[in-house]
Image (cartoon, rainbow, N blue to C red; front, top):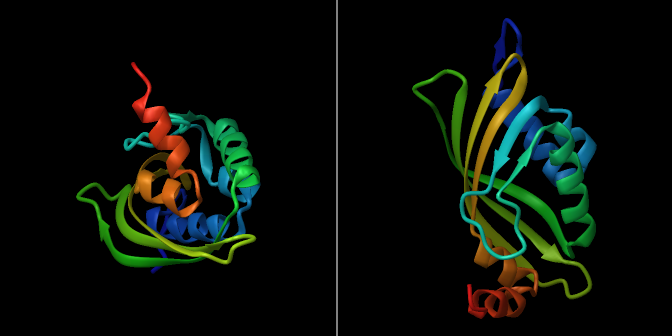
Length: 153
């Protein structure tokens, strides 16, 4: 589904471009979808994860670093459901990210929920509810995350 608004692509069109940038692991293409002052939040934090990327350049740097350090290679993003929000700027998406781990070929599937807000043809806000522990397990980092969680606060 694509949608155009008078000021540029709407949330569904930006979602399609967002997914393509994720599949391509292209931090520049991804960041260029965001407004200069956009916020990309990760509400389900685990140790080693940022709370949010604030601004287009943090999105660019954050994803470039994360993808550069990751052995995970995304092959497909399967949409379970996409729901337009009551607010026309918003789309809510249930999805499952499928791929493999480089070197081992081990497959992974990480469910998640994405709430994307678009305005003026750019992404202005994302709340990215990913299965952080599933990501850690699938990428071989679960033991490190568990050890960090066991540390005294």
